[in-house]
Length: 400
Ligand SMILES: NC(=O)c1ccc[n+]([C@@H]2O[C@H](COP(=O)([O-])OP(=O)(O)OC[C@H]3O[C@@H](n4cnc5c(N)ncnc54)[C@H](O)[C@@H]3O)[C@@H](O)[C@H]2O)c1
Image (tube, rainbow, N blue to C red):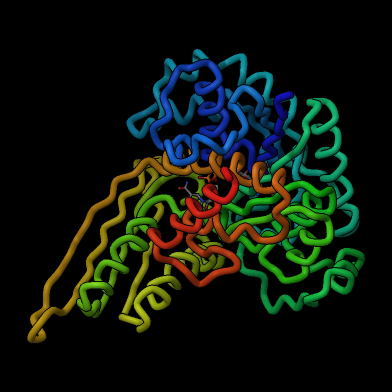
């Protein structure tokens, strides 16, 4: 009998989540082909990944809006990301989805994210433990109502600030006590992760927020025989960086400096205007160069919010490098990508691979998913080709 899988999105009304919903509707209705979907590559054919028709979406958000309004925004104006006709063909799907989107929680998210919310869409919580219980009530109800065999929770919420001086014991039973402290220091992304993992659901962090990136939460995942992965989807400029930097290294060309300027105008960009939220993202984009090259060239990353660009991100990268006889040379590239459209298929892929891994008995961190992330958990491997090999090796083992 075919399995039914619930995909629960934290940040369900955001640009990426709305594109995931439209994407899934379009796949179920055969309104699109498989372009952009890694899991549809012929090498994964024998895996028996979950069929698009057997996936159902739900989620949490903190804003008072609806999926059709958000989809219409993505399909209108000069910076449109999707065709308006596609939204028209998926309107019933989006309206139905709204019944499964529940008010989220705000805990240690910083003022910029708090300002996005509307009181009516936020659950009031007394403690970290209470927040976990409220989220779990929604997750259980979703799994029961939709008769899901399993649920994968994917964090697509706005980037949180890095928590200041957060001390979390490595052991889950000690860390768990933080939930009962009057001022629970854990950010919302970690609370959602705890809620999912405690129920034995898979958890994936597509954002650079803390999420499950703590030894205590890895231990929780192992105890509950479930899986987790993250952090921060690798979709555009950083994806190219992780392809190009190893190529320079293999030709023994020395990179002297790498400068990347990013401009875009969606709500993610608006949140990243706040320097404390921006720091989380810049750190996630910047760390991998040294790890791939074995030395640290001067690097600079800027991220600026330019409203008129909407979801279209332009990244201009300037790579100054040195060749034989010390001769300096330059590579420049300009990437003009539509952020949500790059991210959405990867979210659908991550749901399929995570569900399969859990079904086949994997537990803990899914290191084989590292090619999907800017800051992969459980490995320092950032070379895209090497990371992709981990995915294909896993698929080969699973197909045996
Ligand atoms: N688009 C990409 O290519 C890409 C790549 C890597 C990472 N990301 C990350 O994915 C996330 C989503 O990106 P986006 O463009 O959809 O952003 P977005 O701003 O459009 O959407 C974020 C959504 O999260 C909601 N939200 C914020 N805090 C929440 C909370 N505590 N609980 C529930 N909902 C909450 C917001 O209301 C909003 O609807 C961001 O963190 C972004 O940095 C995106």
